[in-house]
Length: 412
Image (cartoon, rainbow, N blue to C red; front, side, top):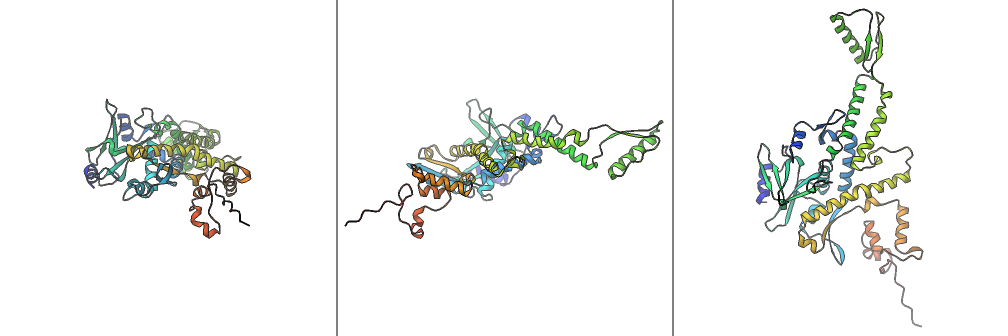
């Protein structure tokens, strides 16, 4: 391991570090002061956002959906062939570096790009340009600049000060939705108000429960209290509230509540609404984070799970695949037909009965024209090709539609 990455590995110690390197002054302010304040009051940063259960659930359901499916390298030259002898094949399918599995690596970069809009991965290469290792950086470690000629440059901040420039050719920059085209938009920043209100409602609910649901009010008495009596009375009221004891009133005292009760404030309805608002920001259906409508049935739930794959995960698959193809494969390799591909078929499976009916039609049942072969069906079910088991199953060779060919007529 040498060159630029050798320098970075020596200085960074190949460990996750905290730095102040950000992409603009506003980001620096947010990092130093813990996030920008929302209109509801709480400051919102990616750290505080992750403490909101709905944000955490949205991030997990997307990042795990990206990580749990197989990611392989293929080459299409007439027919598609899985490639296992290319340098990046093992990196994307099993282990991109010495300490992460493919699942962990994808989960990490997915969390980065979901929350901050950007994920940065250093591409460690051998002297001949072959990709040797993929090292993810925390988004806060990397600053990005665009020159007048539209070229991008990256700088990685080091612990204790200082920084190291990284050529764009050695940095895989995975972007989320982008306005500028070269830097992803911060999802937490865009959804600050929805997340901030979710934090505020949770904090207010927690405070109410901590006080035994005893909300502040007015304690009025007849006559005038001395300063000492005022202090003593206030302490007595607070002590009774904290202990949950009944309050004894004298001197014609009266208690008048000054705030709405939790029922009046509709805390539960507000919190449910904020779950939906946060889910909208991350384009995740509420059922995927554990909030289902009472009218939801098993059948409708199954369709929602399939819709989650199609409308939430598929765009992320495409985003990562195309970015990986551009950054991890050379132009010549792409011309030769190499490309990476996620396989979400396992997530798209319906019930066994539905799959059986679909496959039967695909193989030509009911007099329909077949559009799949038996081996293609077996591949979708993650089974070996039919030919490898023909003898075991007591069947002969299959034709292109997965049917046994008609036997030759016997001579008389």
